Amino acid sequence: MTTGGATGGARRETSAGGVVVLRTNGSLRYLLIRDSYRNWGFPKGHLERGETAERAAEREVREETGLRDVTVRAVLDTIDWTFRTRGHTIHKTCHFFLMEASDRRTRPQRDEGITACRWVTFEDAERLVAYENARTVLRSAHALAASEPVRSARDGV
View 1 (cartoon, rainbow, N blue to C red):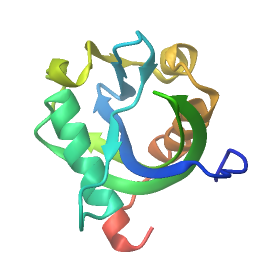
View 2: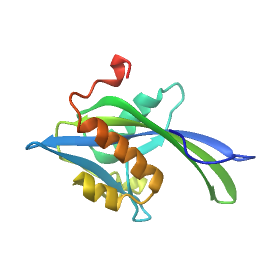
View 3: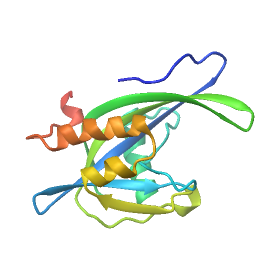
View 4: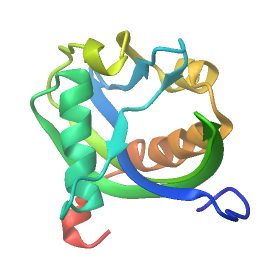
């Protein structure tokens, strides 16, 4: 799924991120991060030169959350949006992946403006996530995570 509109003369940026799930005591918890604007969302960041979206998503999740052991389970949605910053129009495309963590210990990457990490239920995540396009990604992740079994993105999902 792609959301957004015409890009005109906007500068294009590509990012990747993860919706991280933790299976604990028969329930699912989703990892949210709070950015410097106090908005809750998912870890994501720019692709580095020569990096695939999947590898960038894994790297960004590890860097921004301090999680050590995360595994990509499925390809989720691609979303896009346009915004203005410092007098420039940016058209951003972000590829999201469903990831699973084996440990709940997090460490927010404060030097990147991440002020908190929080494991929450799907219902709380849906309420807390700041942007509708991110809530749509969350719903896709939940539909996959709640089904049996979740296949790896490396298996051709």
